[in-house]
Length: 496
Image 1 (cartoon, rainbow, N blue to C red):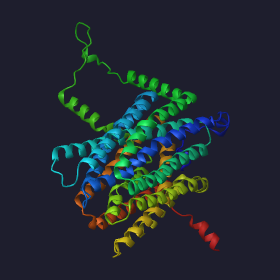
Image 2: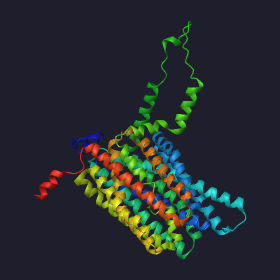
Image 3: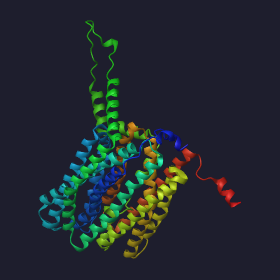
Image 4: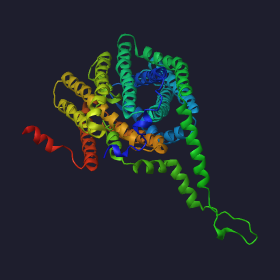
C-alpha cells in the first residue's frame, strides 16, 4: 500500500531512457549546500553561548532569542513556501543569499559590540537593549532566508533532478544532502568551540560575520551553474508558471445573468466588507496553505516529526547554555555535539541500506522508537546527584538518539516527496517548517517560564513525553496504512 501513493514516478522503461545527471553539477550543488549550512551551523551553536554570557545565571535571553526565531518561522513559514513556489528560481536564489548574508553580518556585528562594549552590570540600558533586539531580529531574518533555501533545494530541486530515475536516486540524493548538513553540524561547532575556548567569543562572532560575507559569492556561482546546467529545473518552473496562469484564467469571476442591466452592460457584484475581511485574514494567516497541508495523506508523519521539535533534548541553545552553566567547557560541548553529528552521519549511511529492505514507512517506525530508547538515558540523568555525571549522561543520550532521529527525518521527508503532488510540494514544505517552528517556539516559551538552569530537569521530562507522543502518533499512522505492525506469522515461522 505504501508504494501505491507514489504516482509521480515513471515506469522502469521510462526511467531507463532518462539521461544521467552530470556528476560535476551534483558536486557543485553539494558544495553550495555545504557552504550554506556551515555558516548556519556556526551561528546555531554560538548564539546560545553569546546569550548566556550577555546575561549569566539565567536562560532568559537564550529563551527569548529562541522565541523570536521560532515565532518568525511559525508565522512566515507558509509565506516563504508560497513565495518559493511562485517566483522564478533565480530570483529566489538572489534574495535567499543576499538576505542571509546581510542578516548574519548584522547579527555578528551586534553580538561583537555587545561582548566588547557592554557588561551585565552596564547602565546603558537603551543601547544595550537595541543591540539585543537587533541580534534577535537579524537572527530571525537569517533563519527565514535559510528556510527559503532549504525548501528550494531539499524539497524542490532534489525531486525535480531525480524525476525519471529509479527511486533509489532520490534516496541517495536525500542522504547526501542530509550527510552534508550533519558534517557541518559536526565540524562547525567543534571549530567554533575551540575558537571560543582558546581565543574568545568576540573572535567567533567576527569570523561568523566574515564567513557569510565572503562565501556568498561562491555559493551564488555554484547554484547558478547547477540551474543553467540542468534544463529540467528551468522547464519545471516554466511549466508551473503556465499552469498558474491558466488556473487564474479559469478562476476568474463568472458573470451571472442577473447582473446584466437593461442596457446590456455587465455589472460585477461588489464584495461586501465581511468577505473582504475574511479574504484578507485568510491571506494573512495562510489558511489555504494549512488546509492543503492537513488534507495530505502524510499529515500524521509530518505532525510526528514536528513534535520532535518541542524538546530540549538536542544540542540547541537551551541545552548548550545549561551545559555551559554546569561548568562544561565550550570545546567539550562542541566535541559532544560533533559526536552526535557523526552518529547522524552514520544514520544517512544506514538509511538507504535499511530503506531498501523494509520500505520507507517501516524505516520510520523503527527509527522513531530507537530514538525514544536512547533518550531514556536523558530522563534518568535528572535523578543523578552529580552535576557533571548528569551532564555527561545527558550529552550521551542525546548523541546516541541522533541515529534514530535523522533516519526518521529522512523517512518522513521521503514520504512527503512521494505522496505530495508537485503543485503542493513547496506549500506543504513551508507549512511543515512553520509547524515545526511552532513546536520549537513552545520549547523556548517553556524556557522563559522555567528559566533557572537548576530546573532544567522539568524541561527534560516534558521533552521525553513529547517524543513518546510522536512515536505513538507515527505508529498509529503505520497501522492505519498497513493494518498491522509486525509480521507475527513470520516470527512464529522462524521460532518453529
